Image (cartoon, rainbow, N blue to C red; front, top):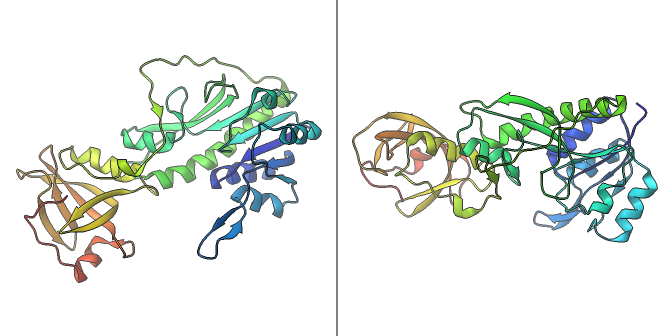
Length: 312
């Protein structure tokens, strides 16, 4: 492939995109990624997933702390890229940097734009109970996720698929979309469709721990989506008998006439709790404070839960 390509990204999502571009034989002349960070008990500096993969392929790695200083700009200019592909880089890019690639600077965004501009599009698609999502390749613009659209790839969301699982699928789809976009840019046939952002679209704001508590007054299906949408972080939580649980798996149960939050049953099938719409939620996988993630049935063997008491 004749294009000189720079990839800018940091987490696993970006590493998957990079791997696909390498496998498709694009000329990746360098990657830009976040600086190494201390992790685990020893606080050893650990490379980002993008850096880790790039080093296995002999790709030069740049790790500027900011892209707004002269050093990062000079590094990019010296590379003389035709295209820069941005995938979950996590840094603000000034217009001066956006203007450097000869053909385009494009972004791999994990939603069908203009829906879910912002930091957590995968989570919000599930939290809102959407049945479809996708990946958009957009031309980078100064305003966040507001650039013209180059192409979109769509995929259904599984009824039990959580945000972590969807993240992995969209990373693969994002790599496929990025490679297709490069082919169009190389051929000079890449389209540009301006976004029309209006009040019907939702901004995908960052997640927070304040979102975690399950509100048993809500419908059961909404609570299922709440559990799915907050995996792997910050996770849905609830309290029972003074113990806080992270809830990892749950599904809709039967109809019930009990007050929301009432524990209806606790046994081999899981822990069934009444919800606000007259149906129940069956918790099947959880993690108690200080414990490990496990099936609810396994937890109950060592920690019996009384029925008819209310969840917090």
